[in-house]
Image 1: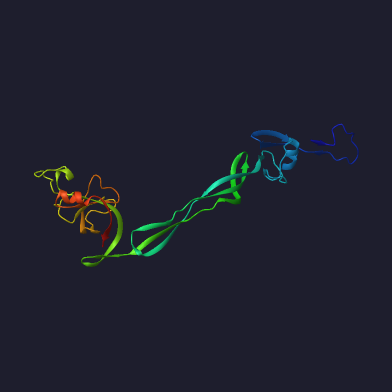
Image 2: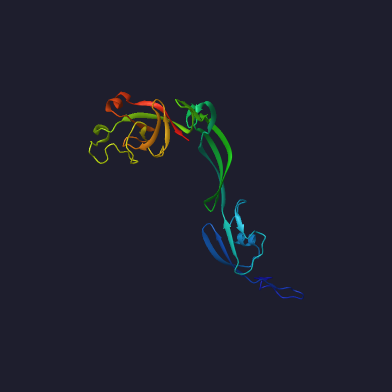
Amino acid sequence: MVEPEVSTALKDELVIRITRAISVRVTADGKTVDMLTTKRTVKDVLAQAGIAVSPLDKVIPAGENHLSSGDEIKIIRVTEGFEKQKVKIPYRIIKKENNAMEKGLSRVLSKGKDGLKEVTYKVTFEDGREVERQATEEKIITPVQNETVEFGTITTVATARGEVRFKKAFRMLATAYCACKKCTNKEPGHPQYGITYSGIPVRPGIVAVDPRVIPLGSRLYVEGYGFALAADIGGAIKGNRIDLYYPTHGETERYGARRIKVYLLE
């Protein structure tokens, strides 16, 4: 650019200024344009290119910066909006000791219920891509109801031999079995007749358990049955179930099925 114009008549002390154009690359709104310009600041180049910039937009480099040939100007369009979203409030479990209950047992005093709240978020986008989400307001729709559970602390149980210490108590469904074919599908003469999963012969005091709940080899005290050894398993004995050995099938039928407490001894 020549100032004044080349058609201007020459006169004494006339100053002629020549501003050489520079090459600048401008990226905005998904488009990139290479332009020659005599402007030297970012804001002037953008004005010349007819690119409007909002107060939220990011201009790199900033508008007052001076440019050199080969520089690049990048406009990041920034928009903001608000979004409402319903969010679950998980309930907490509040535990309380019960000194009249055995260790390992628990009871729900009041059921928990999740709450619900409406959260308002301020969401910021750069060139259409979400870059920030900030909660600005919360409103409770349904209050949360925490769950209250009491758990036992007693670690001894009264037996015919006196007080015995235990690690953990279980509430279990108890059934009974004997060595007969009806209970074990094995007849006398079978090599595994009367032999437990652990490899020892059955006898009163042998019980079948789920090893995932009570490890085999554990010493137990079974309510209404006495001291026992967890030495066997059974196809139907899963979870909090226990099968008690009795010598005769008649005894197993009389026992039936009962809800009892089982104590894992120390």
